[in-house]
Image 1 (spheres, one colour):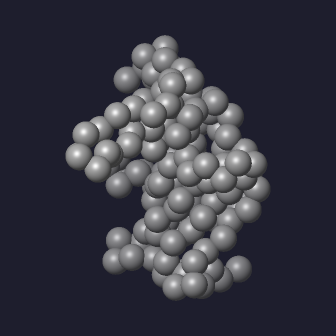
Image 2: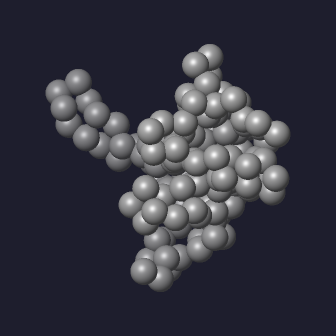
Length: 125
């Protein structure tokens, strides 16, 4: 199966991960072609870490897996939308969504969500 997606010069494509039930944006991560294929094959999200330069599965350490409901792409074929059923929190800082801060018109920042887990008890590193 050939994927007609537009990967960047590093072989990556951004993936917006959205809760399938309530449409909340949970996170944004990067996928290479292998991550896309593994995601489609297994039904669990796989990503490519630019900082660690390796593949990873969402929830491999925390247990907070993402069960894939659908994978879509935009009109330019250069961004993915992955709709999931999220177990636990998606954010490594302990929140359900990585988008837990809001910028006010005056530039102030406030946290708009409650933590759903303690990262220190989940991540060993």
